[in-house]
Image 1: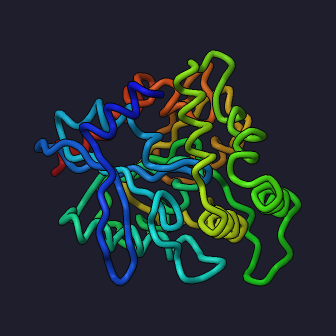
Image 2 (image 1 turned 90 degrees about the horizontal axis):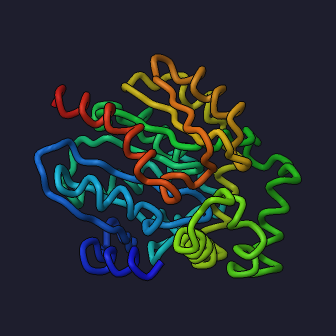
Length: 282
């Protein structure tokens, strides 16, 4: 973890800005001519998880990895139970601040729901949409009873705290082949979540329905997942790919949920054709 963290702090330090009355934080690197690449992390993670993409793509384009509201020093959203569109509006506030009118948008796990909401709201701002190890959501209506999977997540962070939750859950995101550095990075990111940010994100997951959200999304797309993912298993990812009209899909053998962190070379190879097509059409 030390080498990756040292690179991040030197080449893509955390930045802060007050936007629409809220603090937003992100990491950023690069300034090339390619279409900007914007990266949205998952529910138990943060911007640091994208170190392999920040490093690889910075020589050719601007790369931004946000900390979602409630994560990494970003102000939580006002609603206790926000919806995906609330995160999308926060994202557009950050992109406006950064002067990014159009980007390739990558969302991992819960970030896939946020990214899809953004593409649905403003498709002209999304040159392409990549959904990595996408979370499906539970489709619980507002005020509805939460499923046991969701209540267990909330109970875990309340009872165990972030570090205890990370001790219990983090290693499910990687395979047995993951390096010590990757394991430390994934565990550290989950241990750094806050109660308010995580619980709000869990409630957004409960109320979301990614296949339904994708129904009206028409931007070019890719759904990519690891064949050994036990968090969002391949069968569910295939259903998301089927719901995303016109999207390509890639299953990467031998990798799990957080494979953008565990094996960035394979992840980057999967999304490079998307970036190349966006650059060509820019």
